[in-house]
Image 1 (cartoon, rainbow, N blue to C red):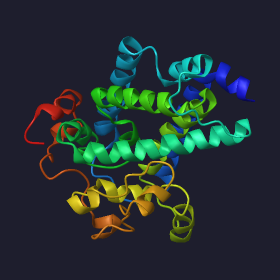
Image 2 (image 1 turned 120 degrees about the horizontal axis):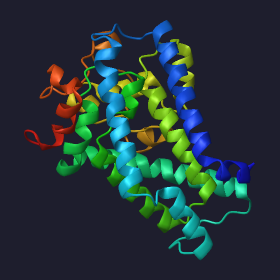
Image 3 (image 1 turned 90 degrees about the vertical axis):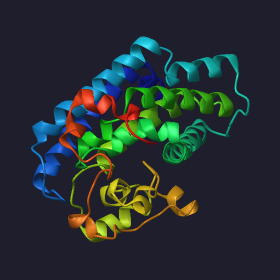
Length: 268
């Protein structure tokens, strides 16, 4: 199975991405949590455009993506702290957990370090939260994130399979936990004990700063509880909460070129 995944990585990632995107978008249409403020077409074009630009930048300027680095580290035994467990399965699971913790820490840093926040706030400037918000990241933030993951892979010697699985999970979970999707309260309460749900992450997109600076997790929900950054519910409730940033409320936040210029506007 591991050989099949590693040799068909590109097809699997694309297949999972499109499958999850279509499934989540379909479920949003059937079971929306919040009423839409804008037609899908008004937001989706720019958000998908950002994804395409980011993907192009990565392929042109950074063809040696984390999977390639993981191959190199494995072949050359170049890790600083090689995490080798008794079985391949444990090794892979441990690698996924380490990468998820690393992304949690990266997300907190994006909010706390002014120059990084300038990049990340383009993600928060979306005036609604749905499946396309999960792919709305500035190309420069994507490149920084890839460099960061490469460093983590070099330090811990995370194997190729763990990197591939985590990249698939990260993309899928980003779309799921940004979804405008109504889950039954009991289901949400149970699921968020283990993974981040749309209701849990939506709090992070609140216009209130104390809520914006909480619930940083993307996949495992334990990190926010462990590092005391967990907020259970938004103060105004999910139906009445305002999504976005107070300084960026105009419709220019929904236009591709204006979105790309957000890091260079105003104060950090």
